[in-house]
Image (cartoon, rainbow, N blue to C red; front, side):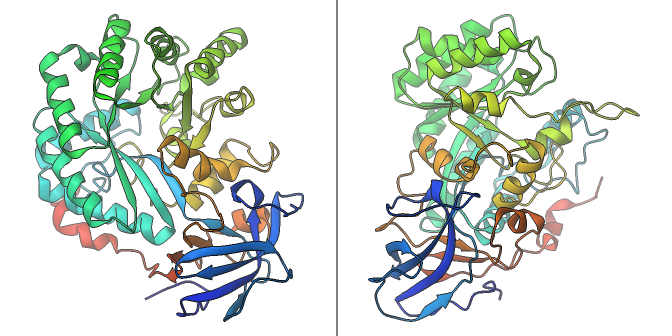
Length: 442
């Protein structure tokens, strides 16, 4: 059993001294940040909650055992707003034959048809949750493939896992199907029923440039309005600059005067627009109240992949420009060990580290930790998560890194994770636990 580097007391109340915290994630006054946006603080924890956050060395922290963190960075447990638990870990039995997007899509479709029973989906989803929990994740939003028989299989499994993991990880589910199926009344009826019975008042689909796109989006928005759903879209996951379904989604949101939350994922082709078109689309996205999540590791893996040719771009969206325009922006894990992304472990510290490199976040302000914490918690409607606040839960990730260069230089594999003030077992599940599901490895 591993609980990280810090010997956290088992006492109900104790102190963490000389901790560095990202000021953007702290809801407490009187703190000063260094050039990395980090504030040196002492934290008092009482009965599973943060009692106070004070400048390091200040009086009034209270009594009890103390753990000297020696300047190590402390984060709240993080929030992963775009993952695919139901696809996870099928790579050993269904690889992507060429690393392309279409190769991934076809491989997943074949595996789903051949292997996705409730037992199979549940085992792989739970494996993913165990990984995320051990790494320090507090909440996830997983997309659920919602076509045909899978609607009746995966959604009940999601509901069971949500109940079983309550208090450890908050789980949301959003339906996933191609936009063309929005024009099928029977399909929409089945998905709405599944969401109402087992879901989280979330609706959504994959959008792309079909001739009937606007009509299909009208169905999606009317469905959301009629049932009080928020929306979550997969958008323009392509390097084709003619793919502008993000603009159509923004137009539809404005046309329908939609007041719910909207999250758009990927938006890869936005980064390949001419400057005037990019600015126009971003302005509409802001007006429509759409938030955007980039999936840096998966999209760098998939986008611009051509045999025998070095990729020319990184696959990510125009995240800096969106943020500068006032659009809420995030990064997330996306797929794990499946044909869309052969790697990954639902580790948001890895996502933040690699996202910083891929998106060059390191010279663009000191508040990018929001992208895996405060901002996704807000778009998911999760009050109190993704921040450090007096009175809030003592759900923390403790590290030895004293600045961002130390933090990103290593995987922070020795991190300590606290849930309600108690150190959890951070031992990761062994991939061999899923061998019985893999059959013949393709």
